[in-house]
Length: 116
Image 1: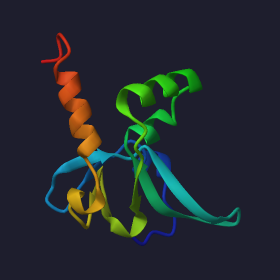
Image 2 (image 1 turned 120 degrees about the vertical axis):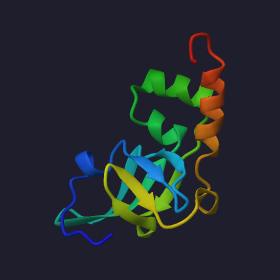
Image 3 (image 1 turned 180 degrees about the horizontal axis):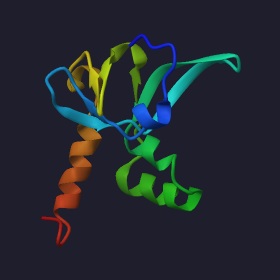
Image 4 (image 1 turned 90 degrees about the vertical axis):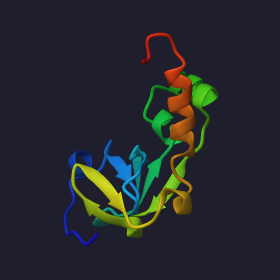
């Protein structure tokens, strides 16, 4: 993805990650930046329950990590193919170690009363 300027909040955060086979494989919870104050660049996106918990208040983050786990998966920015309302990746989810936590959490949530 070659952009001179990128509005991370509107174009990246909370967007669905889609792998090369068009399979949903997580959501962008955080981004990894490099550089100095004069010129920052995105070097990766973070997904997984540990990354999501990092956006919560401390007491709630601790509970979320205990329930859902603390796994954070980093996807190198070079893997981003195109940004639309979703973030399309160049590789399959399995090659990037994505979606395992999301599937387990979804299965757990489906078992709750009233979830269907």
